[in-house]
Image 1 (tube, rainbow over the protein chains, first blue to last red):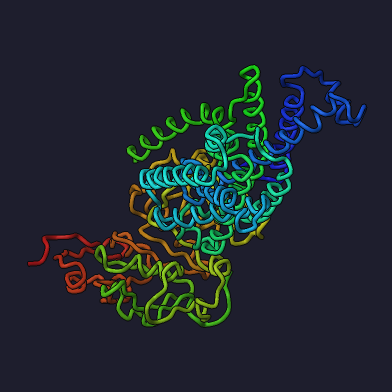
Image 2 (cartoon, rainbow over the protein chains, first blue to last red):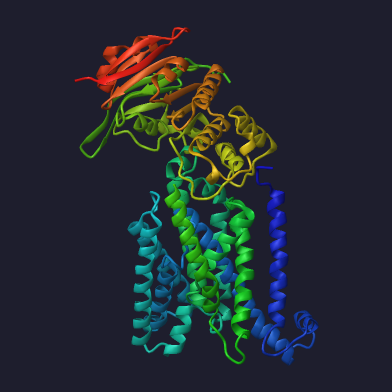
Length: 340
Length: 265
């Protein structure tokens, strides 16, 4: 069967949802205090409210698992959208410095916002503004219109990232906002210090992003053929691209504002899913949501349990997986470009 | 799918295109009749592809206007235009490994709603298009694994699946071997037999003369000659257009055959 059917989409998504639930459940069990599956089920059912087990499950682990899912889904979907918009499987909001832009926006508010009366709630919108600015800058610097060379794109990203990191450290130090260790955690990306009360924001941004992206998924397929072909097949290219860029920026902004710079999720998940499921974005976008969520929860569980008594930033775990994969993809990309 | 009305399928009215102070097309007026297959030929850089890009509205002409079935082209939404007019580009750079079947099905896009999935009918149309070009066996293959010629056949199949009233083909026979070149032009011939129309940019004058009703010669952005193959393919016109001496033979079916000689001094 050459056509994607609703049935296949539903089947794949149902399978991924099961995986996600399993992963989430396992993440509630695993941790420094040993719990059994029945402990977790009991706590989720509300047996013995206020007890130690219920506290661990409902107040410590569950919010973190929820947040991990939201952040992972946002990052993975943003990666899928970015790669299609830039028509380059190497594009990733983190590698290209868009996450850096979001982080810079967030830090600006965190360090200077208090003096102008902005509270913590201003952080996600500021992160969105930052990622949108970075996206627009990338648009201008590297150009979305033609087919941009991977080299040009990646170099632009390197410069963006270097600038954003420097500015973040500078601002944070200036404001005496965080001590070195916490800035470090933020730059690597971590869910440990994140505020669970921000989950609503992330869910909202993710929801808006999805509402923009899902109806345009078939347009996105056509956009990967290039601007002219897309237009000739009936796509309102400029309008759709603008909507999709805003959707991407929203999701990156939301993820970064609660977790800092977690890298490579937007690269690993889309790559894996393209291998498994093909290139149709009507399936890829929602699948990336579930798979990204599960992946980040697994990585975060590893991050908080690998070293006894200490936590790794989850960004370190995703980078260990993602860095080598990125190099492999880059090599393959170059070989293919050379072969053509 | 014969449609009423006597308006030409496609009409360029004094189309001019300039990029900065470079004039690419100068006041080109050309009509594509219903049921007609028209070849557009001319040297590299003469503005053929530019005219096709104006026709599919990916490029806006600096002057002049274009009508599709009598209606001003600017009145069409992109989707509407894509249902009237399908394009076979010279080549399509592919970023992601879509399968051939998926690629051909993309031709059905202008007929689907925003959240729509292809129906069994769409799949049938796509399969028929692939069968006409002899590429059904490639349906499950990744587009990245194909040769340039096979990819061209996929693009033609996609345009056929689009089920538009006008086909615009940019060098459809480049990259193709003799047999496939003939197959593609024969399919386009079949396409116009049902009252639809095709505009074919081609460098192969002999092949164009064999298949097309009329030929238009374009040089330095201006129309040099328009007419039946025997009217247009004269030594004088070809020298004026290409700057080359030619010998004209006649095939057994009466179609002209162009044999290039030395560049004119």
